[in-house]
Length: 271
Ligand SMILES: NC(=O)c1ccc[n+]([C@@H]2O[C@H](COP(=O)([O-])OP(=O)(O)OC[C@H]3O[C@@H](n4cnc5c(N)ncnc54)[C@H](OP(=O)(O)O)[C@@H]3O)[C@@H](O)[C@H]2O)c1
Picture (cartoon, rainbow, N blue to C red):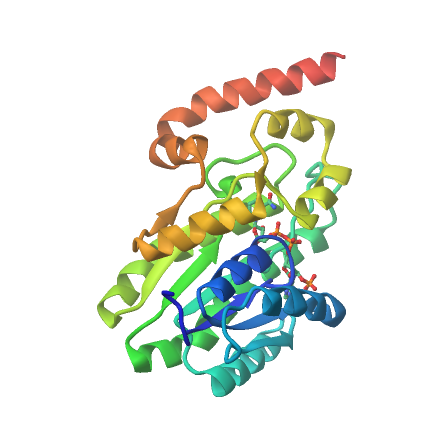
């Protein structure tokens, strides 16, 4: 049990990928702090995760905070650390996605998406880092997206926020390494979660057609890849062959993919 008595803090831990990862960590003996905005949803997740624990000593705590509000997320993470100790893992999974046509999305959607996905991750890392630095141990896991590896039609608000996380991960990794702190950035593919279901209701038809070509993963399978990747000390986790190839060769593949996407969009517009 790799995480026996270790503390894992998971933003966005009440649903989808964050919750599935919390369950796997509970099975490995971890004490877990789940952070999200909606308390009833957190309480349901807490019950599910308690059911996955393997000993009576394990603690599964919940904290309500909006990651976009720096003082709130800082307080939540500091309280979690005061109760369960410096985190062995900080997983930043809280995120939002609103697909739509660029000209039709309100500026607020662009601003909110960047604030939650990028700054929410940044604020969480800043809040947990001092404790990790003091202990000279810990791993930060940033949940970005496959949409950080290539721009996708209809995702003009979401892709830049996930690209920004890629930049943060790539520039921060080297600073943390000498301090004994690991960093992993995850680029999940389409994953069957409430977020994806909500996106599917509002995606432009072109986006639906483009994204329909990719396989949808389960949150459990993505969580498994995250835990394995962290255990192996991987900097990048790309579940599946398609994203692994895209991550390695995106600059070479981008012209071909853009040609393919344009062909789909043209076909849609002619219909
Ligand atoms: N599903 C996919 O296809 C997919 C693919 C690639 C990447 N991702 C990324 O994976 C991460 C998890 O997504 P998911 O699909 O698992 O989504 P999900 O099931 O909707 O879960 C999102 C979680 O984030 C929390 N959250 C959202 N906004 C928040 C905020 N401002 N402050 C605090 N917590 C917040 C939600 O709880 P509350 O709403 O109660 O706050 C929930 O716990 C996201 O960063 C997403 O962009 C998802």
